[in-house]
Length: 161
Image (cartoon, rainbow, N blue to C red; front, side, top):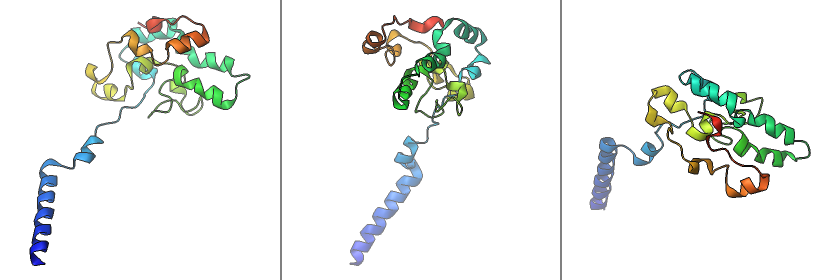
């Protein structure tokens, strides 16, 4: 019996030593800073020309107004499905919840294409945001099914830059 206690004690000490030397692997997986949406006005501070071009020329910069026009005749659940493509970060950390709670992300903004900007804003490092975009990045909303269903021709990059 004392031999069993010795084995358990040794195993416990080995586990604790491993934990102290290398840390708890599961907690490290969640320790990365979670990127959140900050809104396009935050991007304007450093990217003024791009922001002005986006607000002036990109239809998606006013996308919430487009779905408000279509709201009449839609059930609330149907209307909410529009948020996935016509707002920024819907159902994601810091993303759109409602026009009144999160007005700074109610339209499609910079982060729809470039991803959540909180880490980039904090570090100012280019690798903390998606810089180079391809047509594949647009497929989330501009899929063949949606293009056919809504009978529109998608504008790659939407005149943003």
